[in-house]
Length: 298
Ligand SMILES: NC(=O)c1ccc[n+]([C@@H]2O[C@H](COP(=O)([O-])OP(=O)(O)OC[C@H]3O[C@@H](n4cnc5c(N)ncnc54)[C@H](OP(=O)(O)O)[C@@H]3O)[C@@H](O)[C@H]2O)c1
Image (tube, rainbow, N blue to C red; front, top):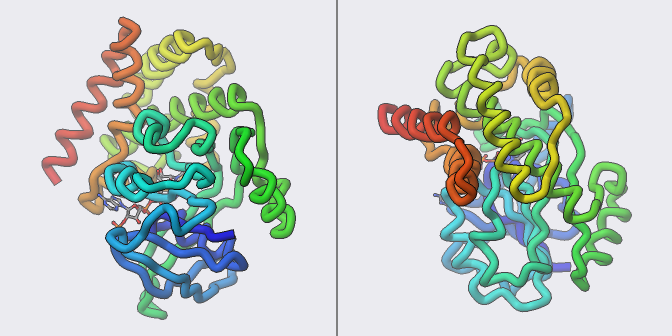
């Protein structure tokens, strides 16, 4: 199986090590060796690499998308000449992958799921190499699609002993899980970025009171597409902040590193959906605006 991993950041490094027996090719702006740190174990990984300009979808059978949203125009270009058999897997945060990538892909070629794996990119001073630190090995949930390569991919997961961490559910169940993760991200990411605090401090701040309106607006939007998310999201998100207390959210890290954030694919997606269905999403809209302003100031 010819596997491409799109991206060279934290998740891409993690996937390159996880699927190293498939000899994957990483696609991005800069390749080369890196360290993958998982617990006490540090592994040197030297995957094959292609720059965006030389990478074409027809060279691969399966593609894993592991980039941040600003790279989406390059991903679209890469997929322009995708053969019908190509299977594309995305565990990117945020929503809108289908709108961005179908076409050029057909709906059954794009498998969008979520992961609770947590990985952070860093520079290893000792080795003088780029690196990634795995802070949690969680669950990856993907939709069951009628694609000819899906059984082959599932076979690979079995060989790698990954069947308990990579799960396949109905498309409707995965969509519901994606929305729950979207809503959690839409609260934790922008609020921690605005307050400049790690996740665990957020519930102690006055800013946390916005979470009620954010959850209410987003669940109203989810209802319009037939998703009933009546779990107690507020306490689930509170628990998530506590379970990841010392973590800096990816949006806070992007702001600190003066990178473009994923706000438009997280709160921005909820705003676009809300406006399409005439639902009040003013709190999300305010946060999109504030994060854009914060990015410009940095
Ligand atoms: N890390 C996690 O624990 C985790 C968990 C769940 C989901 N996710 C999601 O997985 C995706 C990847 O996250 P990550 O943590 O791997 O991010 P990351 O470490 O910041 O890496 C991002 C990748 O996207 C590329 N990229 C960003 N902007 C680009 C642009 N304008 N043009 C070209 N390439 C660009 C970066 O290239 P350069 O290095 O060249 O800038 C890098 O290869 C995101 O959607 C994230 O939300 C991450």
